[in-house]
Amino acid sequence: TQHSAHPTSLTLLGLGAMGTALARTWLAADHTLTVWNRTPTRAAALAAEGAGVADSAAEAVAANSLIVVCLLDDASVQEALTGTDLTGKDLVNLTTSTPAQARARAEWARERGARYLDGGIMAVPPMVGVPEAGGYVFYSGSPELFEQHRKTLGVPLGTRYVGRDAGFAALHDVALLSAMYGMLAGAAHAFALIRKEDIDPASLAPLLAEWLTAMAPSVHRTADQLRSGDYTKEVVSTLAMQVAGTPTFLRTAEQQGVSPELLSPYFALMRRRLADGDGAEDLTGVIDLLVH
Ligand code: FVH
Image 1 (cartoon, rainbow, N blue to C red):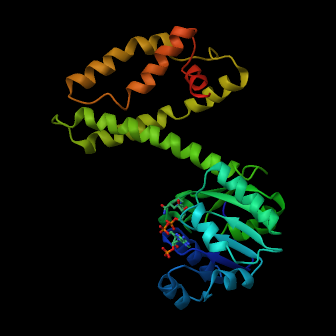
Image 2 (tube, rainbow, N blue to C red; image 1 turned 90 degrees about the vertical axis):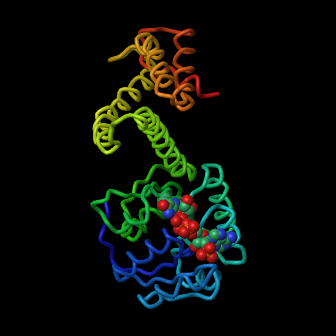
């Protein structure tokens, strides 16, 4: 949930598409905001909207105790923060990172006397400052930092704290986005199947959206099976039945002149699991094949 915050003072490093959107919400909520960007021209519009513009990252960091960073990648965070004094600062890093980079960055910040919170943004810039769009940020790392600045952090987007381990925000971020890519891959295959037919993609789109929405809650059953270790629990469609159906999907793709390369890897895992295990299971056993 998003919070209305008591106006406070903070620094933001990085005025790309996301950083600029974040900055505007803090300014609109009457926060005192100091910004810095490597390419200074990107700060001009925000200066006109009330932001203080620092000449260097060091000057921007010195201006406030709460420092939010939203840069391209972890290497740019390293470059921007080198030479700044982080002693006593609260560093919130919204730059997309791997879990290992986030953990290393947390340790790096601790060695420099700063508290650290990592963030994984589950939103695109137009969703920032629009609560009804449902965007939020996963946070992990210092719980004290999170609690202290929760309202300020909740101004641009909702907040979800997922644990002390600084890598957990990035892990949740990547997990959700990975699932999204799987879904988009499935949708790409579906559109490819109808591509050469007299079927309007615009008529397939709502059907796809409706079907994927109806299927999505099955992740709760998967979680329940993983927790219990019983992959036959509350099975709706067995692995054996689904493997038996895969030739239909592959033959249809072939007949439609569509490459099976997006579907085949998943089907191969389903067949391997069936060969190793119990046909009465759900598809959950595939997860164990993926984990080394
Ligand atoms: N935009 C999006 O849709 C996604 C949504 C989900 C979260 N991501 C992540 O947010 C981070 C920032 O993304 P962005 O959209 O703001 O990215 P850009 O518009 O490309 O701006 C990049 C900023 O990073 C600065 N920068 C790049 N390299 C350096 C460097 N070596 N030293 C200092 N700053 C650097 C760049 O500065 P400049 O090019 O203007 O000088 C921009 O301020 C990102 O992690 C996404 O994965 C966004």
